[in-house]
Length: 260
Length: 237
Image (tube, rainbow over all chains, first blue to last red; front, side, top):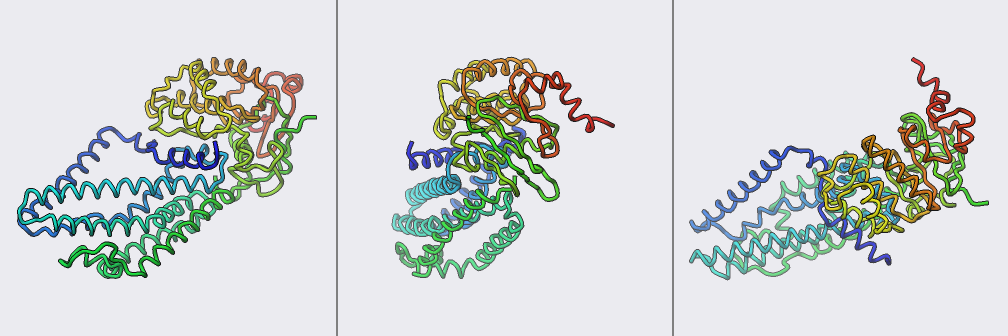
């Protein structure tokens, strides 16, 4: 096999959900409760949205607010995909694969990004279906509303996808720091990420305005595709470079500074 | 003369205040089945981790397959990690497919033959297996590779006594026809005695004896006697 096919074989392996021994050890009752709680939350959210839609007080774009937690989720996707190797006691197999460490960590990064893309696309399609059903069933919603809803969602998800390489890389680095010579900086990474994220969310309005998104979610003005200011795009570009730097650092640390 | 498979010279590895390898100096010849033996915490697993590049020694040097350990040398090494496990959602077949796609020298036909010999159901998920069944899959992932060096760190842990005897005798037959070097660490010294033709006895991070198994037997008798003599002090109350 050539280098490229081996790398994609690694990505394919990371892409598959391989399970967790910790979760396997939970009782089946606990697993069922998780499914029941999740179903209840989804039913409650859909019922609430539909109730407000029937009473003409639902601004469709507001539905995207439910995905505001995505940046945090992305961090934990990156964190989990690496931490699971240690949690499952499979890190010995993973780390002795005869390939450069930047391939190993890079494959996790790419697989996590692809998974994120699948989730985002799935949510977008579900949102589109829901909005279409609302427009078909309730006369006060038009297809122009659905179109605005879809366009604002697309803008928001493009923003998330654009910053996802950085968020995933930070998650990978934070997980890796727990098992390597970087352990002393692990608490600092947590504080920086959680603190930074908290600060961003506490100023959500300003942040969304800065990125050109808030008008899309709340105002009744016409929605445009890619409303972002050039600063946002510049930040996005810089975040890709930083993410690449983080992945190379992770590979270096796995190679030279393991602490097993 | 054939180049040794592993050369350690004054290799030292410390974890904080604990010294795992203490100026370890050994030369392991090529093409032998080597037992690396010693009590818990004597440095066996640290030695294997250093050989596979999982850790780096603080002082001294280690050479494997004529090079410094690293991901490049792992191309020629099949390693079964100590306390290693497998992904719970994989079936045994998926584990072997992983080996086929990512492990150089992995032979699927051999793996299936070994799985059949060890009574492994290829369609069964790891999450539904006992630790002993899981240990067999891990063993197959290593044994089915055509590589110059196989390292097995406590490979029989979790496998019940009856199956263990059958697996070990099968391994003896299997390894006889192959020109591979094998390093095995184990606590089950009596059952595996017939497997080794070379031995490294370790204690507190150093090799206290290394050489031909026949010489060891001539000097001390059975492996059980070797342990009683070489590690006598540890057993005193």
